[in-house]
Image (cartoon, rainbow, N blue to C red; front, side, top):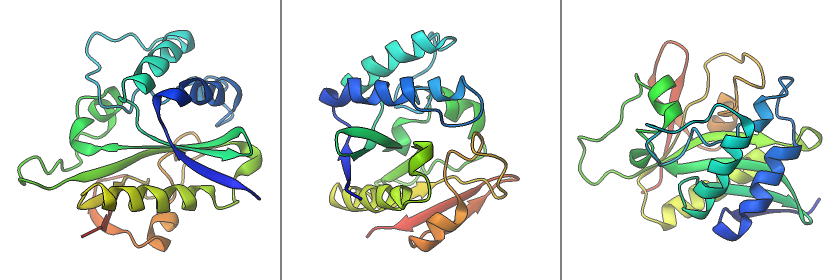
Length: 196
């Protein structure tokens, strides 16, 4: 199977939104219309993400403005997967961080520590369990090391709930890729891989 991982760039904005337009990511029909706009490097204050159309408009704006960062997986010319990977310190004011990640350490007090965070995986249903998430993870770590990051960090649930709730990836994926538990909350592990 020919899978290519491409870094999200402004010229791929329409490929990106088309993937969310057409690909279900869970049994909840609205979940596939998230466009991942709540995990970005933009302050959510004053933003209205209440409808799929509004989220789609923000997604195009955010991809073109480099606010949403990550990678697309292509099979031939079709997008079959998405991985949101952004600079942790830049995302602390995003909507989802403010809502769900308040108990996660931020490292803001450690000068010079750069952390790349993985916030989301979305794989087309017919492409699941074909190694795409592993390929994403390898690419995120490779690029983060090249770009001078100290760690790649991920936030999987301790226990599997369902596909909609476990969009941050399974614990075993990160363990197999050399991550270890750095911190834990009641429901989540903070897992890290050191790059330097």
